[in-house]
Image 1 (cartoon, rainbow, N blue to C red):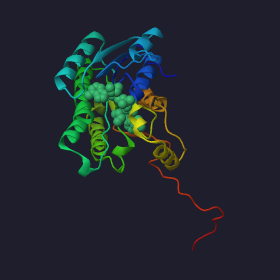
Image 2: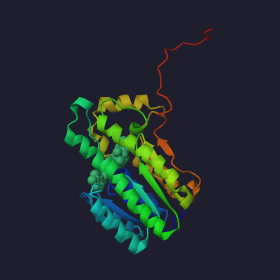
Image 3: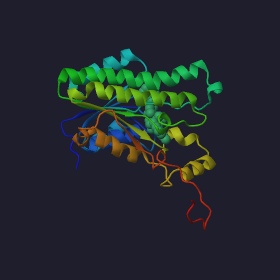
Image 4: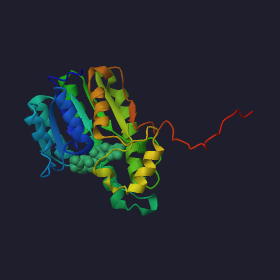
Length: 265
Ligand SMILES: NC(=O)c1ccc[n+]([C@@H]2O[C@H](COP(=O)([O-])OP(=O)(O)OC[C@H]3O[C@@H](n4cnc5c(N)ncnc54)[C@H](O)[C@@H]3O)[C@@H](O)[C@H]2O)c1
């Protein structure tokens, strides 16, 4: 049982999808959670994530901010650090632009990097400052992607942005390990969220077929790995990227005709 009582966590993009699942997991483990998002998503059927945590007896606050705005990020992190300290940061906020290199405009490229890469950098820097001031270590978990570790056809800007997050994670991971701050990442495969609602059913089925365990992830699968990396169970892991992808990066299933067997010499 992972116990995060007394810990203060910040989750960017934490009001829906993978970020919401992470915020709920961390709160279930006892952490107080600050949810940072460009808007506090709720629908007639679904209450806000912070509201759900508070109704379940946990502690949560939410702030509306754009992670690509460093002044906003610094101001919110300073406030959270002063109010409750910062022990855990999950850099999850992100957007997905589809398009090959020739289909990608300057504006799309810059927006992709502003949110995914600049946002991760601004929040990491602000959290590191708070953690170093407090002097009691910390955990930073970056939500990268399998698209940061392998090429993904038709997603030029997105793949480049996630690859930047992967190596930023490794670099920061080795710079701050000695201060007791573990910086690691997760690389989700295909996850059921608003972001992947763009995939038509035939593409979905094809992607399932390429995944060794034959399934897409739920946001909870990713949150379970994030919870592990946010806990003391990960104290000796620095700058690592954990794939949560049903085996996709390890190998794509190859269909071998029935009856094929024997030795080739
Ligand atoms: N869904 C997948 O299959 C998948 C796979 C690999 C990686 N990821 C990554 O996981 C993360 C979460 O994705 P998701 O699938 O839950 O998508 P999502 O679109 O449901 O959630 C993204 C969240 O980020 C927030 N956000 C976007 N821009 C922001 C900004 N400028 N400032 C603050 N918040 C902002 C959104 O409001 C939203 O709440 C992303 O980084 C994404 O790239 C997703």
